[in-house]
Image (cartoon, rainbow, N blue to C red):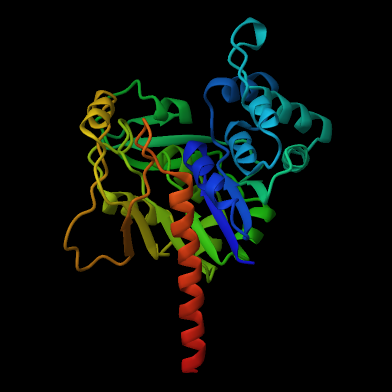
Length: 326
C-alpha cells in the first residue's frame, strides 16, 4: 500500500483525511501544534498542556468508530465551568497527564476512536506562533493572527515559532517513508506553514523522494491572504520548504454561486484565482471540481481524495515507464 502523509491542521486537514481514509492506503497526519485560541488556549495557559484541538479533529476524521463516539469527541460544553471546552480536548489533556507524554496520549486516543492510520503531533515542544507584518509590527499568538485585532489589510511578511521547536521522530519517519506528501488546505499562516517552521520538517521533505502536492485553498482569508492567487499561496509555502518545490497544485475550476459569493464577501473572503498563461510555473496544475455542492464553498472530502489517489496511480505509471527505460 502507498504511504500518504497529510500535513496541516484545522478544518482543511479534517476534510482531506475524511476522504482519504476510504482508500486502501497507509495514512499519516502530521498536525500543527501552535494553536492558542479557545478551549485549547485555556488548557495551555491553565494546565500547561500541549494544544489538543487540531489533533482532536484529525483523530475524529480518521475514526472508524460509531458516529456517537465521533460526536462525543466533538461535543462542546455550552455553559458552566466547562463552557467552551470540547470533550475531546479534555480527554486528550487528561490522557497527557496520565501517560506523561502527549504522543502516547494521542496514540491511546486513536485506539479508543479506532482510527485508520496515525495522527502525529509535529512537535512536543511548547511553542507559539509569531507573525511579522509588512510594516514591521510583530503579532504574538496564533489566535491573534487568525482573528486580527490589527489592520488585517497589512500583509504578513514572515512567520516564526518562539521558542524554536524540534520535530517528533514519528513525523520525520513518516515523511521519510512517504510516497505522496499532501499539504492540506486551510489557513496558510496559522495551520499549514507552522508545521514547516518546526526544525527538521522542511529538511525531511527536501530529502524525501515523495511527490509533493498542495491542495490549494478555495478562498482567501482576511488578515492572512487578502488578494492572494494560487501562485501567491505556492510562493509563500515554498519560502519555508528549504529549496524544495511543490510538484502538483490541485485547484478548483469554477466560481461559487452568486449567493455563496455574496455570503463570503461579507466575511472579506474572495475565491482564489489561478493566473493564466504562466509559462514559468514550476508546478503541474490540476484544475478540476473539488468543491462541495452544499451551502458552503469548501473542499469536498471525496472529490479531493479521488484526485489525490489518482495522483498516486499516475506516479506508479511514471515510475514503471522510467524503470522500463533503464
